[in-house]
Image (tube, rainbow, N blue to C red; front, side, top):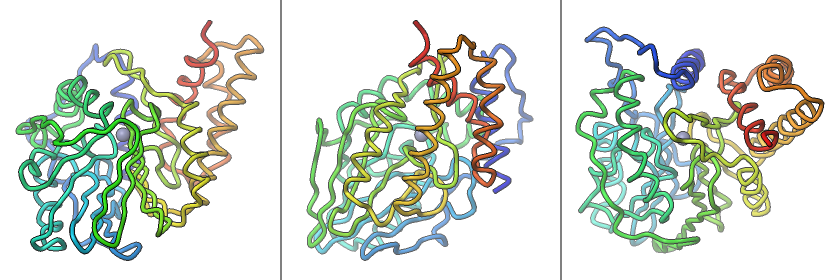
Length: 325
Ligand SMILES: [Zn+2]
């Protein structure tokens, strides 16, 4: 748990800064090797749904899901860089045998999709159009950012961006053989191109960074990177849509596999935070004062949640979206 807290602090503080003072790393401080997914962490969370879990809660290690059917296999997310992606491909090939393979990515962020090139020609790559466009626009900026500020230049150095073989606009369906997977694009939330992937018949939903279990939400607000596309109101709407499908197993972007209760807890937190920000700014308070007043209140509601260092930015996102005239 400690690792993710420290790392998240680093990300929040370093990315939120103006980058005027670059964070110095010694030449040998590259930590890319710590970010490689571990195949020892694979669990079948529902029939045919295998998750390479982020069991140790290591920052920049995502949950990667491999869904098998009688005829084909779908991989969801690649891990950070080609070293992780090679392991994911190896595991997918072990599970798939000679079956057809598909790859999709929950959203364009590096630890989720910056290994897709390994799958080109091996798997049919499918993204929603918004995610494809966002990757091509922001991918190089994030590759540089992660390389220079997050000490993973080794993982980033051979990353290149491949176009998907298939794009869809709102919804796609993949029949893996006895197991149908739905891909949904519900418009911007955590990023412009978030994807919700579900297996309706099994009550399984994969949310990427729309949900981190037992954690405060990651709402990116980085004007320096020209990335202020987060949409917290639509994010909440997506939670409503997902909740309406009554999921039993909720696979988050990072952290433990969850249930409907985790989705509800995150939604309740967002509702409370949003309403409080509106109340305080309507009373004439400015962002720094709102952050100072509200952060301890939100922290106290979930003392066991990780990613506390993102609370300030979450408050800022509500403020920028709902209070700025
Ligand atoms: Zn993300």
